[in-house]
Image (tube, rainbow, N blue to C red; front, side, top):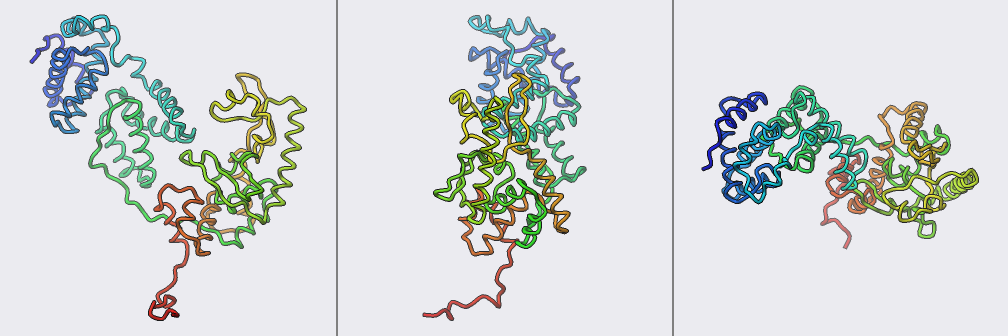
Length: 435
């Protein structure tokens, strides 16, 4: 096995101590470093390149090393990269790099810039965009990663271990006593960090979790919904009618465009709902005339915008590059446009956005108060009520799942707890059925 120089050994142990690695683990970390350098020499890999570490871990998997050992080995080599970056081991690298790879010596696996936390958030934003996740996902994930940063006292990202994650999640459950759903969101955020930003697997065992409680959503009666609608002014009343009448999430409703409505087929199409899924729902007949009158108002606003020389509505993805004139076509206008134009600072363009969610939420909160509703009702409560009322009307649970856009039937099944089931007295024996 390749031996390492005394200088490298001393510098490496000093860095281990600085990184709060327990002294009883130092020999094991040195052992992984020797294995790694020996591996690179034997198979002619550059020890300063990150892909060499990937190949080394794959070799450990072939030798049936445990996930815990793989994690420790990866951690040990990442610390070696930091030491290499500081030029402490320049001579050692020269000894181990194969001659044909010597020209690549100046390309260390992890540079100081890449190791910075701000770079982590830049990479996170890019990873979220590539996967077409919503901006809300970035905001949530970034929040949890920032909390981990503070919890670990800004420990270098590449030195984060599964134990750091375990301590953080245990703290959330035991000390902060957050809900199980909150813990799951934190876990998913950190899993994304390790897998897609740090490019390592996060193996966490024995994490203390809060007990998952049965969640029963708040459901309004039809009388309560009508009472709330009486205290809502236009256009917020129409928004709520679609939230309840179609089972929309708030962002799905506000992101509707004119071309999403099909009056001939009496359906409304949701594009890029939660999870980037599309679905169609029946258009409520009772608000048909109201919707048509609303569209006339939207068209009048559109005509005024064209005359004022506005720059169109905000579009999504790269569609504006593909169809440059689409943002000024009526079919692409928002069904619920914002009252004022938005000026884009970078270009000074005047564009129109849809109604802001906070305006709708405030209007609903005010209406709920005026209607003297004692339940905790929000914009999402109307979606819960939609599902529960369909179930109460004996709609098939699979049909309700499709209308809500749920991927898993288990999610839809929570509404079975909001509807009174038939009692044993009401149930009838099949022997008594009519022939």
